[in-house]
Length: 68
Picture (cartoon, rainbow, N blue to C red):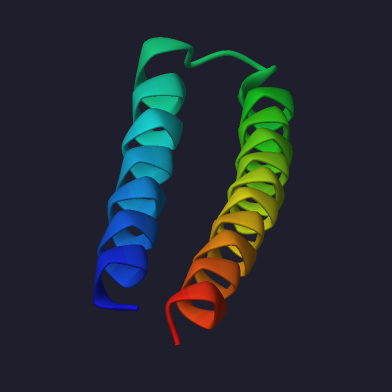
């Protein structure tokens, strides 16, 4: 669980860094659109990562059941 939390924290920090980068690099009228796009991408990435981690957990549970 600790490893997963660390990775999620790193991912959140990375997303924040990218949003800041976009805001400063593109100081245009389309900054809002870029931020919205980044947030949507981050939400999709978190969902995908959650699905992958869930599948990995299932695999580990199967292995545990086989061992015990």
